[in-house]
Image (cartoon, rainbow, N blue to C red; front, side, top):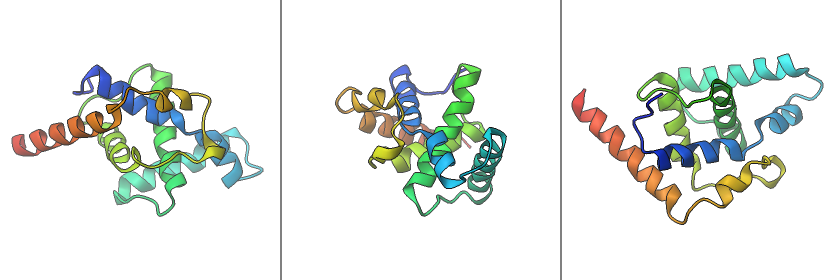
Length: 140
């Protein structure tokens, strides 16, 4: 799938998405729910974000939604197509989260990919996303 972003930026977005363990968050937030229930609750959080276009007040909630979106696309084997609803959700979340620390208790085993990203990669990805969004704004 074409993300409309460079391979480096796409990988940086993926690394942030994989840094947060949404499953550990869901288990702590909704104790006693089975896997299907956890997926239902996370799906509702994603739909709320999509419908309201507003971030949650708690950073962990936003990281969890981002992680859950990435988990969904990771299973498909590729990130969302450029300028689709889920693509906008992912870049929206990236731009709001990339400078924030990932809570220690929710760091995924893949957190190392985010931690060891090349110096300046997070800011470069954010700049590229902003440029693509501005360019798309002018075209429409």
